Length: 235
Image 1 (tube, helix red, strand yellow):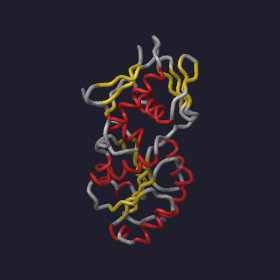
Image 2 (cartoon, helix red, strand yellow):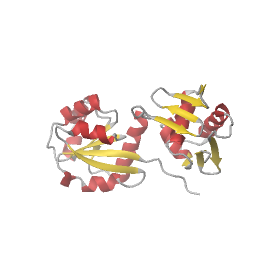
Image 3 (cartoon, helix red, strand yellow):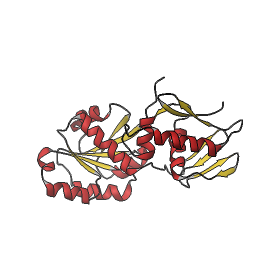
Image 4 (tube, one colour):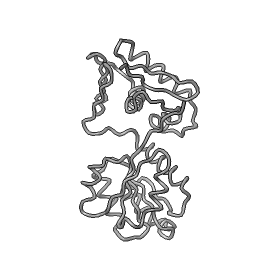
């Protein structure tokens, strides 16, 4: 059995769409979905509509005020910002410092390998932590999850979950009946590298299973040997 990848939506914001085919190909590999948006007066409403998990600002052409755009987005969008800059810009410590102080989470040299760029983007996603979509509620079986309030009810009765167990339940509930690997859960819940060790996942899953209890319509946290966990939801 193969674990399902947790997919993140990444918005690439650029001055001109014909400048980003290599970046799209680079980020579109693996568990990342990519949408390209144009920088302009409709940038923030467009990003609000897409609700990306991260925003990559392509500044390789230097065609816009990167500091102003970073400030605008950091004040308006609940997602980490990663700036991709030209080598001569990234080589300037002053330029990098200005960009970071304007709200960017990281600055990446456009000549870095695809693997490094994706790793830096995943690190930014981990540091930002799980995002609550506005008014997001998840109903599975007899469990209701209010994401913004971080509240869980089972058959109408409140269930008190520690923060880690809530985040684990949320990660699994967003992919019901799908196996998520130990590594994917470490990244999504603990914001740790996928090779950080599965023991903490096993312990947290055991506690979550106990706290949720059993009932005919109760989703169950199931271990899949050697791979990870899934939230099995009764039909």
